[in-house]
Length: 359
Image (tube, rainbow, N blue to C red; front, side, top):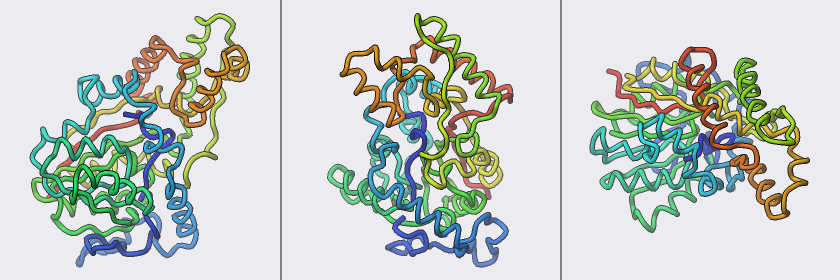
């Protein structure tokens, strides 16, 4: 389980304004027959700048992107960060949040908002054997690749569709389960989407959300940066011959919509649905994916060639920091970050939340 796709993952369609294939979903700005949705929209479907960015977003994820969970999860799963996040989300270092879904009921008709982690989507179908899902994504590529990959093992249980979550209209009371992982931090019209999810849930339905909920565009607060740098320098001081300091990444590697309103997600969804539980993690762990050591190049020169190549690939993918991170450092980041987040000093990094339909 990656700590959110580094720096983000999965999106939604072929063309963000083309109706979905089988009529189950419609890209429209109408909330219902009696309540226009204009007051819920931050962006409109006919805005030229939005159309340009939406096309770029769809293109960004159309092929397997090197920063997506689709590409990186096999390299990054099962490690100490996963165990830490699992503990925060489920209370068990070896239990991923998606495997807890059956505890909330038996689900048959589901909707996946965005292609995300292949292994997580596989587990979702494994632990919910009666579940059939529609998987919608802004890019046709991820949705179709995922459905094709799952078809052999779960024939007839996954239908791919393309839709823009900023404008999609969901059928009323259709789904008893809606799941989104690492997708909604790419959505601008959060209020509209939250109202649509609430509308689409059956009376006993559940919505499971796992996502990045930190600062917009991964531009961390000054307090969070100082805390991370202080702990990093303290860790470096324990290593002979190392230099303190990190270089923060800019936003040039992010997709156009990555983190566009990530800091509003939890507030918006607790407004439009009934919040059952929210658990957070990673306030200071996530910055590891957005930094590199100031002495990184010097460090590489000291290593055998095979380790250099391995770490250069890992840094390019944004998924590992084996050269500079040890368990003690991770424990410090986790402890201080969680305490600071719960005290309201910094925003959390990722969240796992469960919601019910609000009537």
